[in-house]
Image (tube, rainbow, N blue to C red; front, side, top):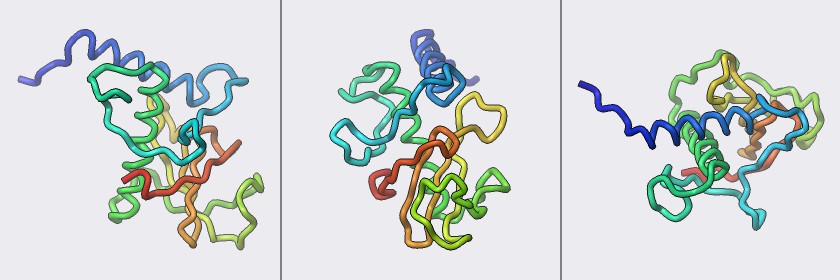
Length: 155
């Protein structure tokens, strides 16, 4: 028989999912995306699901959402590196840079990959865009903004 999560754990998971939905564009259109970078401006590292202090259940809902987002990015990067089958036919497709927010390069230079968005019925708003030179960009607002990340920070 499968073991069920405790009531507090289920409530925490529901809160995290709800916050993730709000953070990924299912809420107010005026909401600014929260990046993966730390307050000091360096790229963030993937962390465990235990929160900043290491105690299970610690951390604010925003911290839990950011940790879940980082974990999702880390998983997609690992899948790309390992050559795993990615879930969407668009994964690995050419990113056109129509928004002009990334450095100008020849068509075909950038490839895009889906980062799962909790609760989304489609691909959601999260993407990784990777250049032929290895430069890696993340957007959680469907190309309205990008943050350059270092994939090594997500290992």
